[in-house]
Image 1 (spheres, helix red, strand yellow):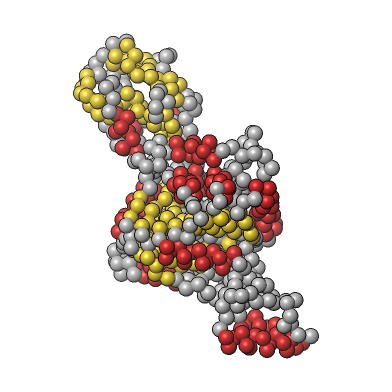
Image 2 (spheres, rainbow, N blue to C red):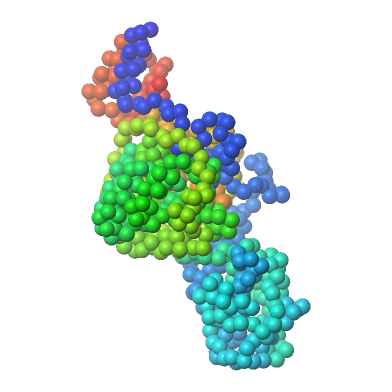
Length: 610
């Protein structure tokens, strides 16, 4: 017995398999922790909203993909390919003045500052114009205007809410937050009519076709997919390459913009402080209310950054533009770093999670992300860290301390082009397009998938039905294992019933990492999607998320190989000398048979060393 134990210890030490960690700084460390969380996941807002009446179970028939996804693209008032101002300009080019925007329910007390915007195609005198909701009528001043003009009973407050010129109404008309009709009249004749439903707090109504429109949170971006002709990228995975994020920050000379969900990494903070000390303009933006609470480890890290002159803000609150600020990216001069992992030891620190990351040295990609950062950090729902911390409540967290061998080294790979995707702006619609265009294979690596009716999963099923080889790899950690096994079983039954080329597995880390936290897709071996978005409705429709799409065979091969290694359970080649030593050790212990360890054709282990 003792000889066998010594041999097993020798085997484990030779293969550098770390002990299994008992807790992580990414979320719950035991079953009892679930009761205090909104989501039983790794401090990540990945669960969907509560089921609605009539929602389907795993065994019921889902609606068609097109039916589910159409409303998603339409939620952004400009669609996935136009900016807000471009859409407004298109609407404004009518022969008659039209109401193009409404803001009935701002966050101010009593909705002070509420307004509506009329687009005047030509210079127009307002002296004989009125507006009515059918109950109350207001007049306009005897002035001449042209273009977009906002009208309000409280012009001083309205000027704080819009960049359009503001004109004061004459009368007492108030916009009903519960929904109403609004008529624009000239000399008593109806020129335009709009109809809107109940106004969500802080949402702006944008004119669509006919008299209707769509609501969009005030200050929330509605940007198109941005494409850059980048030449190369640094591809890496975690926990294997925690040095890449640190090196990226260490090279900055002019600016660092770091956006995240949570931030407890002292190593990353040290690089930001060093950058600030050498004159780099550094800014940080994180979520104000992570699921489960703000980790205690956040306080000293962000305190040190603020003391060093770093601009630190948190985004969130009762009227926040996004359900969660959930991206994981940094801009360092003209370099863009996008990850699936949080700025904490378990993530970028390489102490726990399997994650994907990529660095692109391209000014266009960096500029796009800097634009997003500016829009998010300058919003009305952000607060300086020094103010936020005074009333914030922090929850105890246990930092991850796992150590894992580097089995996949980072690589500089050629790319043909890079796209920047944003949620809720355009990410879901574009991802659906990429899945619909798959011809040979789709590889999906995710913590979990919201449910079987999630449009991206439906699109993957549709791909399998047209002959595309689909593989889905999900996490097996205790807090997602049951639901992932249930979904996997349903998918396998569907694949068997329809004879589909679709397989699903729950990952087996086997000492290479502690849990799966990646959010990655590889299409046809030459298109890679990597970023912060989990596969559920909330992530793509309500959160701020950032993803990159990388096109090219080299970058596709890198991440496809990572996926395949994770799929196979960590098979990796062993040096010849090590194989010999291992065989001797196993023989001495009487373990050389298939009972405990077997090697596949690639020379890797097909079992878990304990």
